[in-house]
Image (cartoon, rainbow, N blue to C red; front, side, top):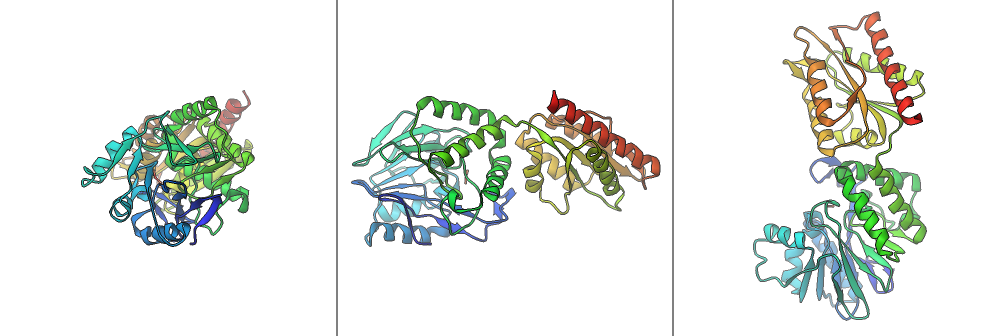
Length: 404
Ligand code: FEO
């Protein structure tokens, strides 16, 4: 896509990846994504982040068009070293020979280990509080560790009230629009939350600290430019993004439950539906998610604001089905907080499913409000009644917790 002038002499020169579905190797991006790179035309032409290496030609074209023919990069600012943003660093260095490359202290460590040929690169480390002049403008740097790697930082230009915020406040959405105010807000909010749930969630305590630190700095920001997705333009939208992140990081549960399960011969699936009915009876909104039909990142996108996590699997080889184990491993890594839950499953002979699921749930930190339900081979009327009652019990626990 052509570069877009987002402020006077400041251009989006990124790439739209319409076909991206596998995001970072572990989550899905069903609507594609963008890699946002920004070029500021000043006495020192400064590039903020690059794009995934496959998209280098698009970046190059954007830089050339923004520069009006003669492409130039005097300064390179690396807000984040993950390869979807720093993937063209070596190409940029080879082609433009920037006078300086700025990155955070942790960024330098990452840069040296990603680019083994970087010994002679003119790297300058800019910790929080450092600032540089690029001509009429200054750039101030703020480290934002673990949003989403240790190296991330925000670059802020006070003269333009613009902040380039790397992974923070991003969304996976390939679009021809560049600004958040040009797209459907409901969808955008959903994608912002999905991104947070799958990428940023484990670092929620750091998010709260960073938001407090930013508030303490009294930065005057009227444009927030993440490295993925739409740009937040205007004070109201900037505040929307900041407030959304605070709400996400606080992980306040809602009256919602996620029942995730796998099944062999539909016994565990039928149990899931009976548990769902019990929850609904108590006024809880439920998502019933077969792990065969819902990727673990889709389950996580629903789970992160739910009050309850309920997991089912038949017993398989003295354990649980592998796709349920995959989900539980993924969820554990994302460290969701404030969840209650329960487990269930069918079995043929040995019947370890409830025991094994319980161990997983305890490792995640889910507070189990019921010992769980298991059934040999096919559910009976009594099994359905037990599942229904367990759903009701969890629903009552959700209501008690949220209404307290
Ligand atoms: Fe989009 Fe942490 O990279």
